Length: 98
Image: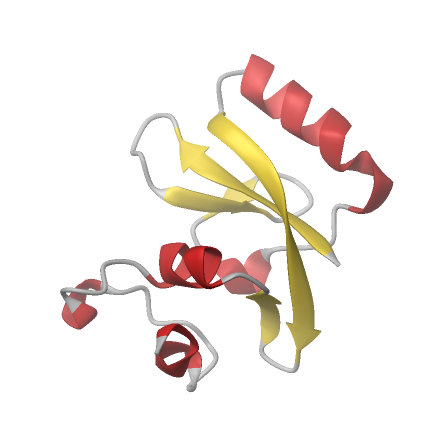
């Protein structure tokens, strides 16, 4: 599965393509399929997202899980302040980055 991520231009937040727009919650991400490149080009041109890119992910019972550690860290938020992380649905998500 390929999911799309980038940064929101207004807030700078890490965002994930949910099929209709951008969400700060990784659990909302959907498989972009063959439309990924077109979606990213359109959304970046509309200035809704900065430097979007597609990443590999696996679908789990709790939603998508990025394949690469970098994107797992981006999904959770600051590693130096766990109290500021987005509280993902996956209770084991904090184990992703260890």
